[in-house]
Length: 311
Image 1: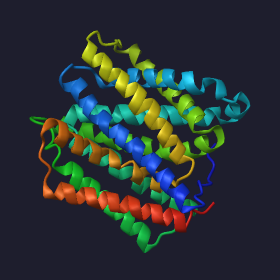
Image 2 (image 1 turned 90 degrees about the vertical axis):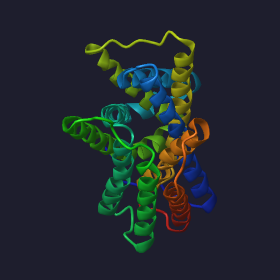
Image 3 (image 1 turned 45 degrees about the vertical axis):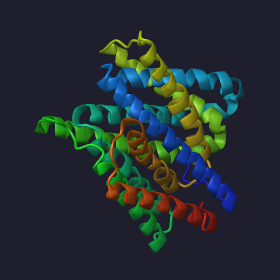
């Protein structure tokens, strides 16, 4: 079902644009992290309720723009892959939210974001799509260390949580990381064969349908107040439709390793916005971690332009 070939970057400008698209997706997801925290902490919404409406709104927007462009002849042979990828997308978002609900943002975010680059790099090395060399190790290490430094002080962890919650929260975070890694490995092929907009539309629609299954054990409801309604619309339009469109465009042109590292811009965005909008103080190590992360993304751009992944 999966194609083992990797996306190939032919010119430095293409590499830069693809990385910019993936970073844009990470940036938009980072803004959504603050919104999700507000909806959970201030308005008491459940993670599955937020995830469902986020995907429903995103799917409606994408269908309106790209629905008529979907080629049924191209989609039919890829339908099993679309179903798997859409289910994985819904699953990794929900598991991450459930982990945060159990033990706070710090530990789930570290696991859910730092584990996928390692996993997809291992797969790429096994497939022969990446070459194990010093620059790759250096870039990956800088990205992971930078992410740890960014997130570590942002949230001290759960207050008064017990050991059971810790184990369950970590389990959700690991599940999120595994699903995100799998989604990343699949999404490049779908975007290349269907087109970024069409792939994003199909994936978001499947994710919305999968999240709708949560109604079997807990009712889902649209918020009644204006502020939460606005936040739900923002999550759907910006962090689902627009962000996934940017992600899909980059996925068709980047290796899975570069894609997962570029989207690590998400926690940096969340931390910077928390400092700007909520008055949180950033420590020196967080600034250093942000610099390391940006340096690693710059290194990926040079690597992709000079030595494209092997087919």
